Image 1 (cartoon, rainbow, N blue to C red):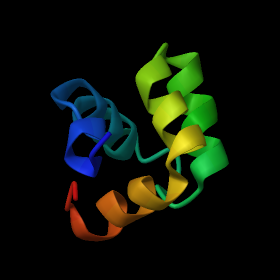
Image 2: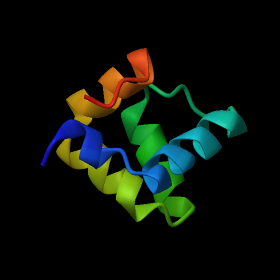
Image 3: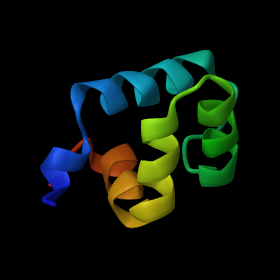
Image 4: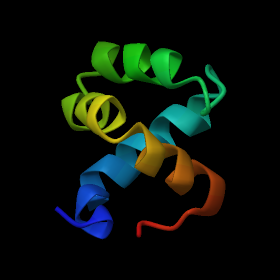
Length: 65
């Protein structure tokens, strides 16, 4: 699966909701996963688990590739 296909509109919305909460540093993957799980954001939990490098790249650059 290509990187840009990983970052669906749903996952981007989930990332933005957690970021907007200010509860976690977005580079704290474990913290973000815990918050995502608590909110029922299972897609984001799996993305961080399976593609942590792509997640960090997205957080750093906003690029989905």
